[in-house]
Length: 354
Image (cartoon, rainbow, N blue to C red; front, side):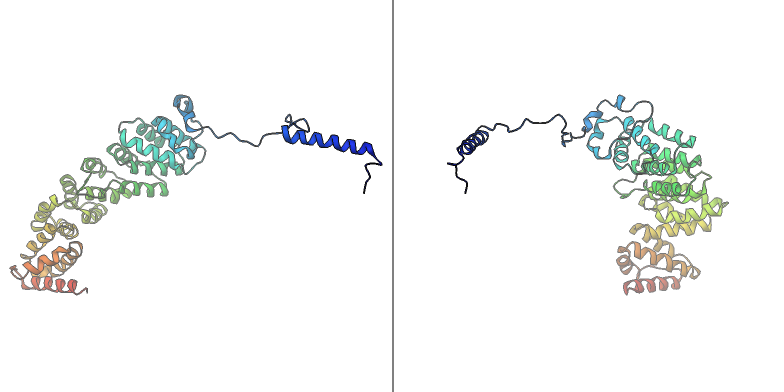
C-alpha cells in the first residue's frame, strides 16, 4: 500500500484530479477540444419528393429527359399528360422494359382525354420504325387498356398499315384487341366502338381477322351481323368464311335473334344457315334456343345429326332450356318424328349427365 505520508505531493495531485473530474460531470465541461473539421456526417438527407417536378415544362424539355422514379407514383398527378408520355419514351430509350407507374398514369389520362395529340405521335413513331420491339409491345398493350374509341382507332390504324410485324408485338396486339370486347354485355355493350372494327374487318392483314371478328361478334351490332352474312354469302375467301363461322358463336346480343332465326329458316346459303344455327345454340339466351326448337319442327330426318349437335350445345349454354323442353317438347308437333326422337334422346342424356 502506498503511504501518502511518505509522498505528500501525490496526495495533492490526486485531490486536484478529483476536483477536475467532478467539474466535468457536474457542468458538462469538455475534457478535450471537439474535432469536427475532418469528421464526415453519416446523415443522408431524404431524396427530394415528387413535388420537385411541379414545373413540368422544365422537367421535360424538348428532348427526352431521364424517366421519373417509379417509386414516386403519388407525384404523377402533378405532371401533365405530355410529361408522363415523354418520361415513358425516355425510359424506352434507356432500355427500361417495365415502367408500371408511368404506364398506368398514362392509361388513366388517355381514358379521359380522347383527343390527346399523343395518339398521333404514337402512330408517327411506329411509322418511322423508331421504337424497339419491347416498346411497341408496351404501347400496343396500353392502347388496349385505354379501351376507348380513339385508342381502338389508333390500334386499328397500326393493323391496317401493317406496322405490327414482330411476332411478340402481334401477340400483344391480339390481346389488346380482345380488351375491346365487353366484359358484361348487358351492362356495357361497347356499341360505340363497333364502327372501328367493322371498318377494320376489310384489312388485308389476315393475321388479325380472328381478333377483329371476335370483337365485332361480342359487341354484336346488327351492322356487324350484316357484314358477317355478306362474307358468308360471298364465299370467295375460305379463310374469311371460317373466321366468321367461328366468330358468330360469340354473338350475345338478343336483339339479333330474329335475324338469326330468319337466316336459319330462309338461308341465303348453306354457310349462312350453319353459322346462324351455331350462333343461336351458343348465345345462352332462351329466346335463341326456342328459335332452334321452332326451326327443328319443320325439318326432315336428314337434319337429325345437326339437330342433336345444336340442341346439346343449347342445353349446355342455356340451362333453363332443359326445363323449357321438358314442358314444351311433348306438345310440339314435328314434320319428322325422327327429329323429335333425336331431341328427346339429347334431353335424356343431358339430364343423366351422359
